[in-house]
Each structure stands twice: as C-alpha cells, then as structure tokens.
Image (cartoon, rainbow, N blue to C red; front, side, top):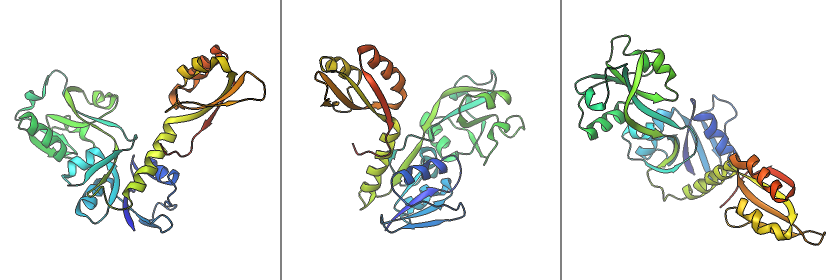
Length: 279
C-alpha cells in the first residue's frame, strides 16, 4: 500500500484532508486517529506533525506526504517537491526595529530569531551574510522587544502583527511558500494516481461549468468570451437557429463572464460547480 503522510493539525491540515476526501480517499473522522487504512484505493494515511512529515518521507519510512514548502526546505530532507497544491500560501520576510535595517547586508553580526533556522540560514549563506541565528518555536515577533534578538525572520501576511511590535519589514522575500506534495521517489507506483486525483481536485476548485443558449450566429463572439480549456461544446437546440453551449470558466471570473455573455445575446446562463476533473 502507498503510505501517505498528512498534517494532523495546523493551517495545512483541514484543507489537505478536504482535498483527499474530494479525491475519493477515505479520511479520518476522529481527530485522534493517527492511521487510516483505505484498502479500496490501496493507500494508508499517517497523520503527523507538519514539521515532521518531510523527515519521514525523506527517510523512506513513508512514500509521499503533504507539507509546506517552507517545512520541506527547513528540514534539509532529501524529499522532492512533486506538486504545488494551491493552498497554504505564505511569505517569509525579515523585520527589525523601524529605521535600523535597510537591507539584509545590515544584518551582518546581528542576532536573528526565527522558527526556521535551516531555511533562513541557507538563504543568508547564499547572500553571504553571517548572523547569529536564534531558534524559537513561536511568538518570534516578540523576540526584539524582549531583547532576545535584533531582528526576526517570519511569515508575513499583512505585516500588521509585526508593526504592533514596532517592527518594519525590509530586504528581499526569503521564500514564497505553499502546501506541496513531496516524495523521495516520485516514480513509485501509486503516486501518479494520487497526483492525478489531486490535480483533478485543484482544477475542480479553480473552474465552474457554464451552460448558456444563444443564436447560432453568435457562437464565435461567445467563444471569444468563453474559450474553455480546449473549445466549447456546442449543441443544436430544437428551435432552429439556436444552440446550447457548455464550457469551463475560471471560478473567479464567473460573474463578469455572465455579464459579457448576456450583453452579447446569450440567455439561460447557468453555472454549476465541478466536483472532480481530469484534464
């Protein structure tokens, strides 16, 4: 059976489990469950701390796993990124007291607190900047105010949390992270099926199915608005001169596309969710 690591808690866990469920796999119903077998699909799920998943997969104890790119790189694991999964996005930046640092070169010799010493240390080595890295498991943004560090390297969303601590973001982006599928041997039997299923879920979440009717002479104009992934499906209607069109449309464009189609002359415009897909 293919052994798959899944985050047992944290920001990655819920979405990862939802994706696997939508991909047709059995998932845990009790948050206390650590192992869930799915013999029908030939897989077994192991619910682990997100920070440990890269280590388990890299050691070969497990075949494949879902974790953050940041955690994979921080671990130093030999596991490989197989597929970005379109959730869990985060950005890593440096921050320090307002006006003290303008560039990362200014960090030379400073104390930098972070929960990702492997990731940040490698970045600074590539940049040729030597610092004293201080590992903290949480509340990194408080390190400067408490005198533990001169600067921090942490996940940044809006930057409001850092500003509340009197810190200002500076320097380049350390990493753009997101949830990823990882494996040591991406060619191992079963991983291709898992990958196709997850890709199908991602497509289903990015697109909707749109149906509409319009006069046949307007098909070219409508196809310019809704080209689809390959081309729209066009079927004749009972009323001569009218056709029905079915096409996939990016979910975030749905209402604008409906407005544009209506302006062209399309009617009976319907939108349906897609639960799964293979492209």
